[in-house]
Image (cartoon, rainbow, N blue to C red):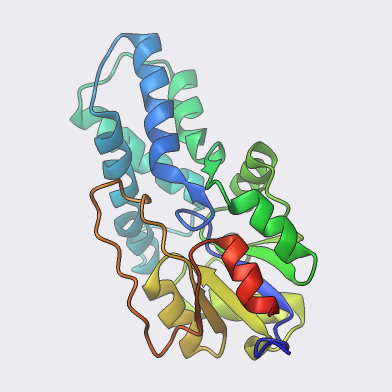
Length: 238
């Protein structure tokens, strides 16, 4: 009998854990560049866009700006990057299409098959800072078979605010210790564990590019480490 036999639900971080945001966003900006005849380091642009993510959320957390969803935060960062690169000639339609690149992210190779296997035995849901429409559109695009979508938008609190994690237990009506947080980011798991969730670490070596060193060391706040979602399924059900 698996030592995880009491787990009823798996909640997943999405960006980087389930989908490859870096390659996908680089592809989208390159398509806009081809259409509008400009060239950039596409991967660097994706990295810079992503690096604006936490500072923009902190502006909400600190009360500098009112609650707004991730699409709006992404657009704020995008507009700043376009100014930085002196790209003022693309249409509003192209800007909006590019901002929705985060709705069109490719899954990691194991994500769909692994999620389908996990869905057979557990409730599977997002637990993401992405807004509901973003997560739903991404699921349609990438064929992600969620049972439901849990989002920071539902509580107007971005992770790592405790209410975002606690909302999973409340909305699923499942005790925290029967919910497992699955993420490629140790900080996410540390926060989840501190609130009573079980935790599974899935390192994604290519999330930030091929030259990034990945921390695969065990931690006392990590209950399980797996190489991908298929391995996660095997380790949860043995």
